[in-house]
Image 1 (cartoon, rainbow, N blue to C red):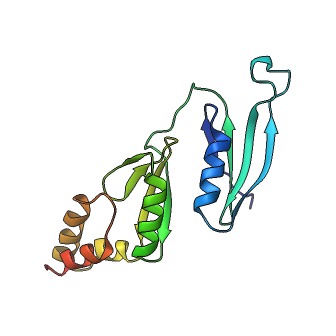
Image 2 (image 1 turned 90 degrees about the vertical axis):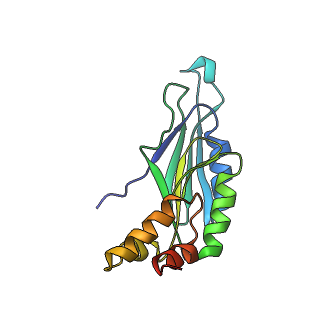
Image 3 (image 1 turned 180 degrees about the vertical axis):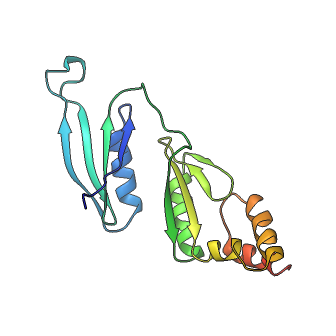
Length: 157
């Protein structure tokens, strides 16, 4: 099966974004940079694409211009092992960006992320509809997700 590589469109800040993302995620690095040449005289010598890897997932940042911007129709999900990871990724990715509801945030480059703890899906899909509803109600009132608070809400505490 062919590999699927997300391409992220930036105006001119693709390299800055890639540098930021590889600083946040372990096992990450920039693998290649291409530059505009004289075929595009007003951008000649500036960064065209940045290929980078975030913990074994390949991405490409393209500096294509201001025509297109990110919105919440697409986001990157960070599945966190525990609350400490949620706190780390939430703090890093939201810095200079905007915190949203239910574990969503927009980073300083305009890219949307979801930062979710392991165990959240189980709390929201509890076989007891009352427990699931209490967990969902609690989640809807949160920005950064707090798994202990979701579980406490499910328990009616």
